[in-house]
Length: 353
Ligand code: G3H
Ligand code: 13P
Ligand code: ZN
Image (cartoon, rainbow, N blue to C red; front, side, top):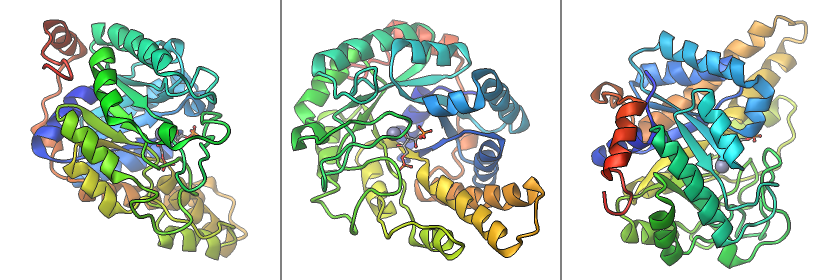
């Protein structure tokens, strides 16, 4: 069954857990996520980037999600647009059955120029207003994702700040976060605090200097009813780096976000945790292993099955670590019409509701 992000994150907040949001591009990834969810009895956020929508095609993606939902009817599934860059991206996602969208106005529509506060607040408010009429949830982002070590943004999907960023841009300002949530009425807020997309997040095991968890804690203190989102939250586990390199990959030593730090975030209002790289790495390592050890193999299924199993393992682990296990059956999904009615009544106001 489909569910909105808002209903799911409200449930997560009431019950003190966090929900991993896994990126999807194809059927194997969808099946891996759903099998992990079914095994751990977890609710799910599946998200598609603009790149994923182009890769898979909107109609195929929509049919895939519908197939996954029908095959696992007991699992609540939120379908979310990752890093929407414009009203059009968000609205066309909704037309294709997404129950949640991210309007990432931290960058301008070109996906690389850091935007002003006023631009971000205005576009995010417009999208939230429209989406909420349809019961659809909205995530916004304040602050620009990037490394506190180098000051550089990242460029996933052609989306990522260009040039060197100041510490002011790289760390969400807590006072401004309060203003932003009140103005835009977003259901969830992505925070910049030193994480970035991809495998190369940190050149050493991160500490508070380069992974500013204190920013999350302070924002949660000021906005206790707002669901916080951590992007760039792959852990880039050593064992996945090792498998990838053992079978011919070339990945220089790197560090991701430790699971213990994500658990700390979950204690301080983090309800959505974005993970893509760990799954990519798990799948790529498994594919490399078959290619290296069985060089005569050319049946694609012999590559994709172990790849999906490796991804499933990552997903199962994150569901359990973030406290999702067993939560699926305690949620009774509300329809989009019921959610729209709740927005109209003011019950879902992120500050007053
Ligand atoms: O936004 C970051 C995700 O890892 C999506 O990556 O844009 O290459 O699909 P992508
Ligand atoms: P990772 O690259 O750390 O997996 O982050 C994914 C993400 O934030 C998608 O929005
Ligand atoms: Zn992201």
